[in-house]
Structures are given as C-alpha cells and as structure tokens.
Image (cartoon, rainbow, N blue to C red):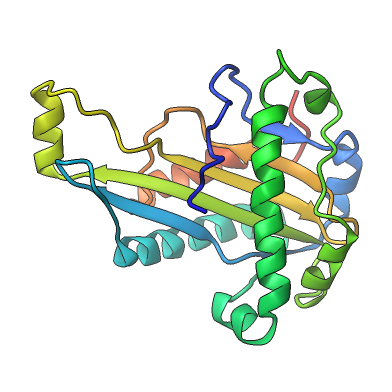
Length: 228
C-alpha cells in the first residue's frame, strides 16, 4: 500500500492535526517511544509518467528523518526513542508486525478521510477516537515502549525530461502528491493519541537535510500540546 490514503478526501479543509480528547493528560505520561520502521516511498517520475522507486533515495531519507526525529523528540521533548528494525521484526515477529502495519494503514486511511473533513464528519474531529485495539501492546512490549510512532512519507521527483514536458504544457499532470504522515499510538490501549499530516500539496524533498529538518520541526510543532 503506497500511501494511498495520504491526501484522499482531505483537501477540503486546512486542518493538519488530530488529537485524542485527553491528549493533554496522556502526552506528559509518555517516557519511551518506539519508532516503527518508516515506510518511505521516493519516486523518480519519468517524462512519460512512469514512476520508479529509488532504494538509495529511500535509505538516505530514512537516515535524515531518523536523525531529525531523534533531535526533535529526544533533545527537545526529553523522550527516549527506540528505533525498531524492520529485519528484526520480520525475522522474529513477522505475523505480529504485518498484522499491525496493515491495521495501521487501514485505520489511518479512515482517520484521514473522516477526521480532516469537518463538514462531513465534525464528530470525528472533536471526538478523535480511532484505535488499533489493545493487542498493539504486544508490539510495544518488544521495545518496553509507552507509545508507538509510525512515520510514512512519499516524495516524487521529476526528471529533467518530465519537467521540460510539463513546461511545454503538453497536458501531463504530476504523478502524485508529496506527503508525510506521523501518528502516535498509545501502547496499552492502541488508541491514536496524535495524528499529523503534512500541509496539502506541499512539495517535500526527503533527500535534503535542510528540508527534512524543517519538515520534522513543522510536523512536531504542536506535539507537546493538543491542537487548538
């Protein structure tokens, strides 16, 4: 699943953050956060519109994001971070990890469609109550964590040929929107505590240290307190 839920149905509103009703109480109780293996898709888009996933770009983006998230949450928020390794989870806990990664994508897809559209689902904004269920505690226990942090990102980079075609106004549109989603999940209950998406239609460059630091700082700007 390649971030199909990232911006679906969300452009109608300017909201970018959803928090649990009791987030202000629960957030200060967190001490250790397990950062789940990031799911990053970095595409190179050719002139004809074909998109190719570039593994080297993904690895670079993960390195930069890990460093920026560590700086923001450990140094500035005082949290202890544990980065879960994909290989470790797949080797020893594959059914558990696959189950909750798939569940996260499904539930987050619903949250993105409903929670950010205040005109159609106002109750889902004021009463943000999505959950992965208490079974998520099994995953959190592997890292002695109080919460799980999921990070998803998509970055589309056009080749010079595609930029020329677009400049020539030949009717091509972008392959897809750049986007980032982060979600904080309570370890004991599986409840969503905080869900943040990048600003709609923002251009991300996840291979640039400067851009990644700026993006991470913006994503966590309202992490310490509930969104207004």
